[in-house]
Length: 228
Image 1: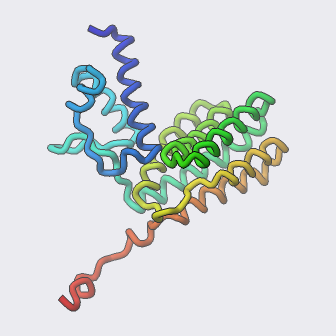
Image 2 (image 1 turned 90 degrees about the vertical axis):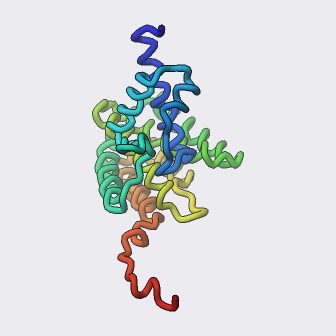
Image 3 (image 1 turned 30 degrees about the vertical axis):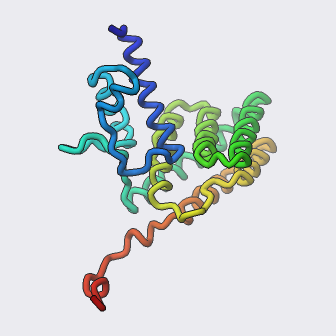
């Protein structure tokens, strides 16, 4: 029998594995997550699996539906807009704190994150590139030095990954590497106003590439069935 501490470690391992798969778009919205599959994969009881699923549901990564079990969440267009608005508000606060708390080591971490993202892009690892793009923003939240903002950002970045997977325009690149490069340069130069403006523009651009308006269209039954 695993110890309480060991149980918690497995619970978090399952949680992080699902979040990483969501951020990499390997688990798209609507995907069913079977408890038995997790039990077999991790050699654990349903109790531990359910604990991980409850944590994921709390963070809005999955939905626990009666008679269907756990499924990856599918945010509505309105929820998507609200989530992006919340994320812009948070990142407008995060970027100035990153600059305020900048050290040679933190600036190296930012550049290393960009290099990893670029390497994934160059190698054709799209899933890795998408995940690392989200992790770049999570790193900024960590370097801001505010644990509450960091916790909120972890949830919002995961939820944005779901939204992008659901509504992205086929073939589009959601997080251009040069935009992160430009932001890093402004952070290094201590340009608070310019960096804050860029992060907001960056997130607005990502949202603008999504097909949210199409999903909001009301279907006219007469028009839809005309000619049949």
